[in-house]
Image (tube, rainbow, N blue to C red; front, side):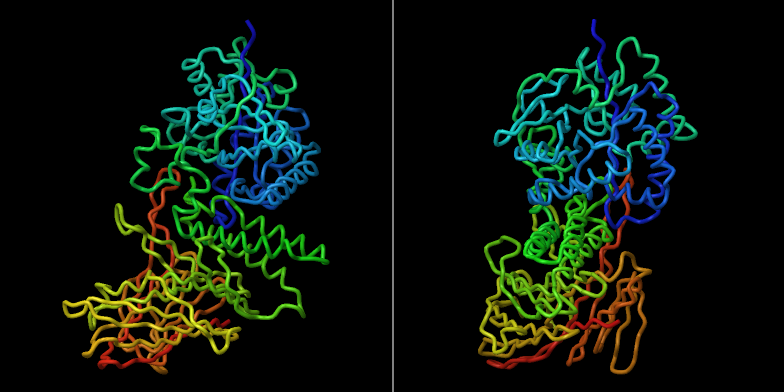
Length: 640
């Protein structure tokens, strides 16, 4: 009887923007123990994938690890897989960017380890049928998908299958992912036995581990170190040499025959598919067959921040594509664009991803840097354009200036992006929050207009915060956008009519919103008008400064505490890391309510409350006579 072949694999990625301590812990607990233990078992073969972000970090912090990788690759004990350099979700990026990211990592591996990879790791198993032509175009012979995808395609589990798109074909190897395929995490030897018990003597068993799984395996094992965990597991694999032997994917593909053809439907990892669904469907998705309703693209609808970042990425991609003449500038812009495509920034991934402010901030920083690279000196001029960058059928207002960008959405008449070009920071980068089961998420942008009872910050009854505003004509079309909305609010037990007109005026260093609030009733209106601003000035509260101003008086405040201040004339949020301040000023004194926003995020099975930004609601108590109006202005200013 022919021996079974076993492929032991590990895929390793940490998103751009993650803390240095997170990299170092993963190295000490996950990356180093696996490879150093494997080194002591030269008869055990493995397949490994490291994203470009990880490889560059290792090159700077632990070059000895790369030397070990090089030695093991040279003796053909390990096979290095290629893929996207910054671990993009391939279905969300253009074919040109797919090719560019993959070639960037391929070139790195070829130069560092002397051999071009033949296999491709697909981040988060995010698959679309068009990838069947992309992979061979990039020089790959095979890729990997979870055994769940093989079942959906009706393909045999124990052998690779060939799939094609537009006449180009590639082999796909079925993977039993350690996180998905078993009831609990198992070390490599136990995982192989579990597959054999369930499916019998398969010709090929490929078991793959995400890097952070090593930490969970070790912590549950009770062993003194993760090194001992892997040593025991590899020793057990060696003892089973009569029943099966380990191999690399490249070696196996050269010696074996494919099982036939298959067409794989669009899919992704189980976690991604589940988290792309509405909250109400997530818990039951795996058991009732709803899981396949998820998709990488559906992620963009799950969180508005995913769509905002995706829209920014696509817009910058167009700008980079239009850059001509300066090859060095275009290369810089392209790599920053690719850095901004780091897949975890677009969804709530295994380590928090989108829900981690530093990860979102890193993606925006890269995209802003790419945009800066496209602005050629002498030809760029500031101004307003209208474009539907978020694909909702309505045009947004985009101001592009030398010192900042500002994007305004007609839904709510809100500021959805405010970029400092100096520090590469999008200050309107606060995660939305659930309003409860079955209710829409609460948007966290700037200049949400709210109508409260007089003297209160509770009970918005206006419907302006998310209502659709109309864009009017402007006397200064290059630097002024005028929005207006007619609406009603519940005041004194009745529906009362009023209108809000707000003009966004864009000047060097500052953005001013000029409000005109009009009473459309036959009697007076008495209420508190609120302007809600949500701003992210730093990754955690110690690195965010907060103070209020009353005329010349300054009141230092605690950025990590909820508080209320009366009679303010200004607020200052300080980005302490980049030494930049966001000043909020009004020509009419206001009360304000500050609340730090936290999000509960699960990382390594532990729930942590991570800082997302500051919610500031500014309130003006207004008495407007019948047919009367009130004017005032509110400004955002960037200061070094």
